[in-house]
Length: 242
View 1 (cartoon, rainbow, N blue to C red):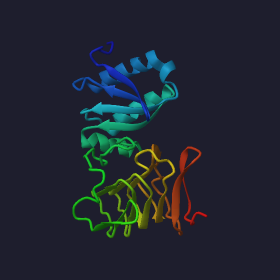
View 2 (view 1 turned 45 degrees about the vertical axis):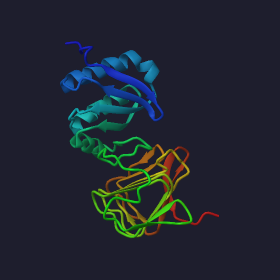
View 3 (view 1 turned 30 degrees about the horizontal axis):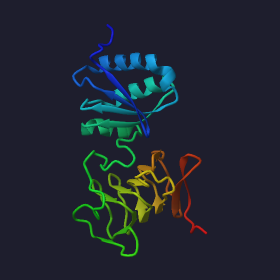
View 4 (view 1 turned 90 degrees about the horizontal axis):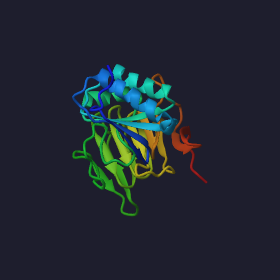
């Protein structure tokens, strides 16, 4: 059976690469996959080498199904790095594959909830803004399910636990253990850095660069700083820059 043309695949160039959108939300996964395969075959020369943002809308997809799409893209010399989805289960499946679930600079947390840029932090956090600079000081451990977002630099005097996230347009410093997700330079500033006394995150993002450490990462015995070098995020011993 040939994929239905009613199952359209939107193709759009964006800052992060190529956006592929699945329009027909009622189509079964097998039809979606076949239609995507046809679209890639038609546009392979144009799309070859692209970084792909896949917008699946309200499709409820499992990890194995997303892995099939990822493999299909890889076979066509494309890299899937972000999945945009409404269902939480689809986003969770994408993160299990090491994929991002939001775009750099977007004002949402990991679950797609809107976050107001400029707010000090979510309710319940003890925070105070620096009067001399556009910075935020949070005097508390950020626990699972909580988010802090700020339009400048962020310093956490405490830990960032797994399932927690920090999103900043500037640098991020964690005076404690960083085990959650941190996105520095969220508006596209690739010169931003992420520093922590113990750097074992679930995910690091600087501008549109993403790094996901190995599952059995051993914590370093010294503070570390992550920055973008030669197009990728690297971690090194935290030293004061001269």
